[in-house]
Image: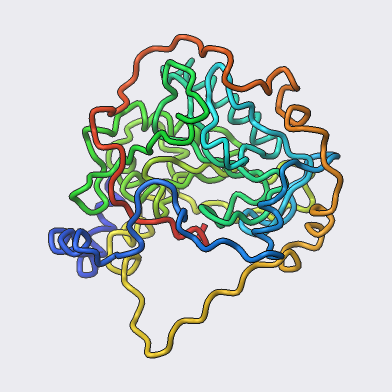
Length: 365
């Protein structure tokens, strides 16, 4: 099972870091700005007025009409989005102030089913859902390069608590990293659990799920320890960050002609050289020094997105958030109903809530 990964690491032996030396350098700040804890990209520059990030970020409600993803996951927009209700029997939406719980109805329906199956099949109390997309999709001014067409969603590794969280608690609840603070790309055995592994493989089991982004250390942990059916293990893709949440990406829905899909994952379980690469110097190397100051990146404009996105910006809105909430207006009332009772689960609550972890570099998603 893990033999392929072991062989890959031997192949990469000459390139692989001395982890003890690298660990010291890491803690000393070699990775520098790429080490963060909590929300990714929270320190990013405020977008300029007129940029795509500013325009789509200012939209409060989705368009009227049918749901359509337009463009690619990291370059597009959407129409007819629906909002995940802030509360459900087996989920709670987090960071409500961001207004990023909008998605294609196929994604919203999947999150509902996944949360129900997680409780019924593996005893997970319920899921905490992070960012999905903005009301009309498009680029976000912080946190993500993807999540633009309503087919991406973040799910926390923290299980849903038994109590209904207040609005303030949803804003302030810290993330819990699955990594050890003092070791490079190493899963913390005091936090990680078989149940979390089962949660990942359950998410990967749905045919509409194309990829699930996880931290490279988590992918390696799954390669080394998962003893169940490994058919869908390849869907777990190593990526920067993603140590306190996992990122579900689904395929373009049938009939979505304006949606640009992503190439399928390669055959096998992904426990190979492509994973071993993350444990070499290359992914973490500091940029080469230059005598010239780097040019600031050009901001993305609406004209850089698929042509249909210009019309999406100008399209009429639905009447209200309640009108666009999945399940209808009755499902839109937040912070009222108490969640159903659920079996206990190890939350790692006695451990530090965050730790230094490699930052997302989401353009590679």
